[in-house]
Length: 117
Image 1: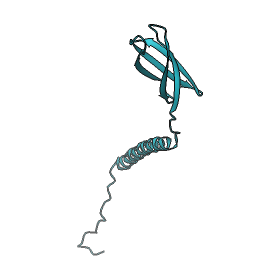
Image 2: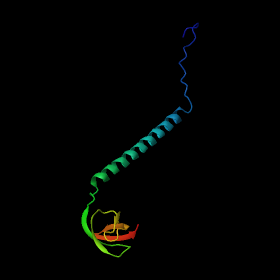
Image 3: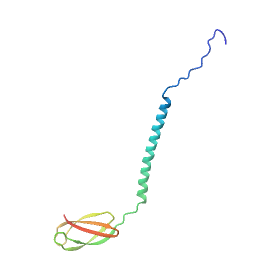
Image 4: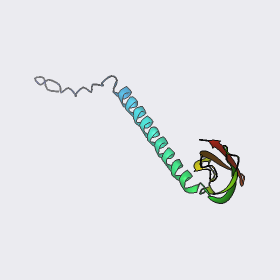
């Protein structure tokens, strides 16, 4: 080294405290966000798969004997029933009073109940 020239100092590398922790926290947040997005996509796919693969509801045509809850007269009623319970509103053909008819299909057997409206 020459006497009159100051020695060159190498640039100091300053390490910022907390930068690795900040990177780690950002990575954790990104991983959690990706996991949440994956769960949402899985839920959507599950609903699509269920919708596509579930069996279609079957509608069955039946003639049901209904007893009027007012006059006691029995009459025949033609109904289309699916697998879920249904409630119909009908008038008695004899006394003309309004009634509610509850239909339920269980294991290929039709259950019919009439109530006063």
